Image 1 (tube, each protein chain N blue to C red):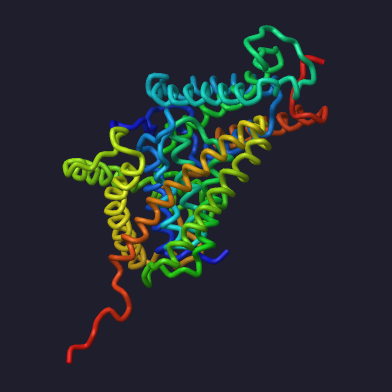
Image 2 (cartoon, rainbow over the protein chains, first blue to last red):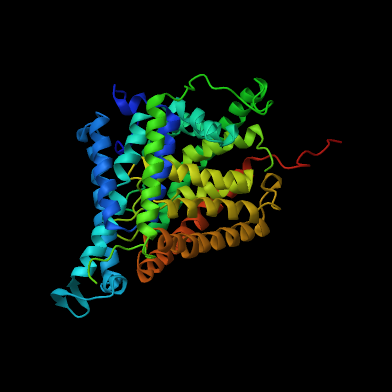
Length: 277
Length: 180
């Protein structure tokens, strides 16, 4: 495995970084809900503009996340391609009109409606990307469990998320060690070997990894038990911060966006904004 | 909801970390540009060992972290992953892997994982995709079917071998005999 493109916390000084983890979590959740609900072009354009603006404010540079953006682009192109291949007339169905721009072959024509549908679909995904990336890049992982507890998630579940974040680098290192050791013994995972051989070979790596993880679970849970984890109903967090004025402003703003989003989207009884009829 | 034990909390955390790392590993599959999803084999084994809530949260946390660090969360598939862990966990609740794995357990585990994959990728993911992203049905079910089949094969082979390997390391009850 080459160095995987994994986004992580980038420490900078900016307005977005200064907000508490709780605020960013609430913003992220409401923002995803808002983008999932709507298919209204006007709302999507607005959300896209805001997300670009937030990105500017955060002082995270495009360079920092270029690999991740590349992945997102590939994913979007493939998704659009598949939708078109399977349903070239889907836009016509939704927008109940048909303006052919170009005929390729057989059922594959390019209609204005289909292009408009693809545009909306793509915007729907794109307007969440900057917010999701910023959420990861601007939130200190150690603050994350405290934020989850703050919005009412049980602290046990929050602690599980913290543990996951804490142990990802360890598990990754272990995977690499085992995988290299097994490769030295001639176990191949690349496409040079047959598919079922590859599957069987992967077990040679996974079994030691799972066994050592089970040992780790034993050790860590014993340590936590000894320190009395889970005795009380509540728990305090060292990194928890109080919400400041800016936090309330941001939360108010995102709730407002959700309200506008719901009203504009469902005002005329349809999720889609239809400029064709 | 019943309180999670300390051990489950840790199992969820480390299980989700495993899910994440395996989800980022690229092992090429026969179809070009797609990879084998090894993470579901491990999720299924952990669900069998630690129960449905652990399965649910491992799928949910692991998949959310994979998506959030690559291209933003695709919620319908995240929920499908969580659903997969939940179903496998429920189906294998009566199965005591710690007491040895025989033919019966293997068949049971595989039926459970196959049903869970079919429901997750053939039903939950496409239906949510229609509701959330309004994508055409034809594309979604073709995609769901592909994902189910490849995941069932992968989990069937890798998950079963992991389970057998694990069972071998557990000391069985009554494995000691008294010397005369």
